[in-house]
Image (cartoon, rainbow, N blue to C red; front, side, top):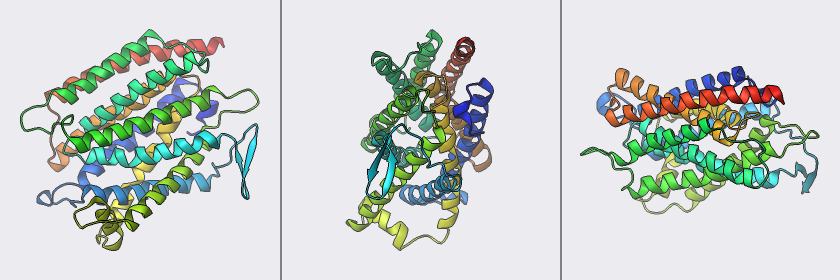
Length: 356
C-alpha cells in the first residue's frame, strides 16, 4: 500500500484514494459527533477540547507507525551533524515542512468545528489548496525544477474547483454562518492556506530534485516531517498551558483540557486515530511519482471533498444533522466536473510515463 515512491500506476493512486476517502469520512463524522449537542444525546465537546484530545490520538498513531516501521531512516547525498545527531541535509526544508504541518493539523480541526457542515469546511479548505498546487507548479516550472507540463484538463479542473469554493463562500442564505465576515474563521483559514502553501512547495521541491543517486523516499520524508510537526505542536501546547491567562481566554481552555479533563476524554483521543491515518494517504498522494503538484493536489483535495459530502450525509441521516443545501449540491456538481477533467489528465500522464 505504501510503496508508492516506487509506483507510478493509476492502480496505486486509486488505492491511496480509497484509503484517504475511507478515513476522511470517519474523521468528518467523528468531529461532528463529538461536538454534537447534548439534546441529541451527543458528547458535546468544545472545539478546544476536541482539538487537543483528537490531535493527541492522531499524532500518537502516526508516530507509532513511523517509529515501528523505522520510517525516520532517510537516505541523502550529504549529511550534517547537530550535536550527537547525524541528519540528512534535507532537514533544512523538512523541518519547516513539519512546522507547517503543525499549523495545518489544528486549523483543519478548528475549521470543522465551525457552525458549518463538514462538506462546506472541506470545500473551502480543499479548494484553496487546489489553487495553491497550481501556483506551486507555475513557480517550479519557472525555476526549472519541474520538467513536466500542466495539461489543459488539469487547468480546467482548477477552474471548476474554484467555482466550487466560490459557491459556498459567497452564496450565504439568511441565518446561515457567514464565513467571509467572521474574523476567527478567516484567521484560521488564512493560517491554514499559508502553512499549506509552503508545505506543498517543499514536498514538490523534494520530489522534483531527486536524482538517480538518491531515490524518492516518501515514507522517510513523511516520518521526519511528522516528528518535527509533533515537536512543534508539543512546544506550542506547553507554552499555551504555561502562559494560560484568564478563565475567559483561549489559553486557559487549553490548560483545562489537561488539569480538568473530562471523564470521557479517552474516547475523543481514539476519535483522532482516523485523522492520523489520513495523514499517511494525504502525503503519499501529494508526492505521488510522475505527477504535477496541480494533478496530485486535485486528486488529494477532490477525494476529501467527496468524503466530506459522504460524511455530511451520514451524519444527517443517522444523527439528525443538517443535510446539504442547494449551494452545497451545486458545489458538488462543480467538483464532479473537475474529477472528470483530472481523469482525462491521468490517462494522458500514464501514456507520457510509458514513453519515458
